[in-house]
Image 1 (cartoon, one colour):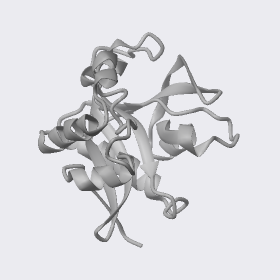
Image 2 (cartoon, one colour):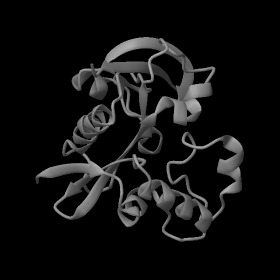
Image 3 (cartoon, helix red, strand yellow):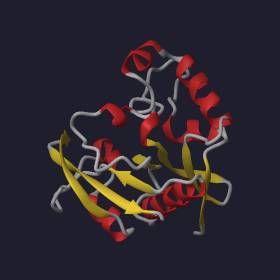
Image 4 (cartoon, one colour):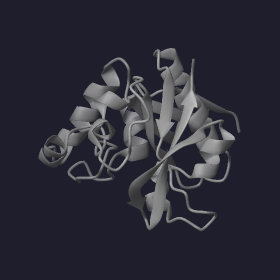
Length: 190
């Protein structure tokens, strides 16, 4: 299997990874950290998909997708931190005033897990941020200490995967997800 990571500009491929099975469903679409809470609550059913379609047509697109041939098999949300709710977070600190980018969601389709796709997505997100001028990229993964993490809540990533990609622990946070603390990991891109 050869994995290619590309900008998430094809809405149908993004839908395959983070969209609902039913068009009227109110699933995340990976919008909860991307838009203000009020807008996130107002976007219902098909309006969520329409909003994501606009993001896919914008520059930069809302993240990256991993492909096995033409098949979309993984997703990573990445954007300037200033364009996310992490910009206003009281639980995840700001390390400094650099205009960093955030990588906050990694999803690999069932049937493709355990094949290194999350590692390819992290590397692809780093390159995407670098290509768009980011001086550094942050992630806020779970520090599970090796304990098993529920796959639904593992979207934030696992600390060891970011360490493997060259990220360093930059700060502790007061954010907890699925019973595990989240840490701020950072990679300098300059």
